[in-house]
Amino acid sequence: MKKRSYSTCITISLLAMILLEDYARPRPMNPNERATLLTRIFRIALDAYQ
Image (tube, rainbow, N blue to C red; front, top):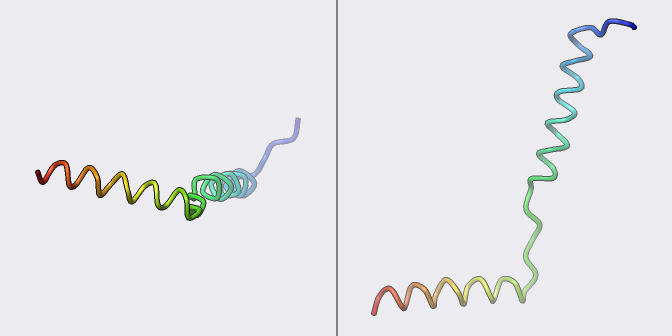
């Protein structure tokens, strides 16, 4: 079995980190999801205020 150099291990680690970071990025909300979220937030805020 061939030994890997440190640069190969670092390259593989960086590639894995880049791929995981891309998957962790949230997707944009569609208008219906945004309206639902804002309605929920404002309803909770108004209930807490009263």
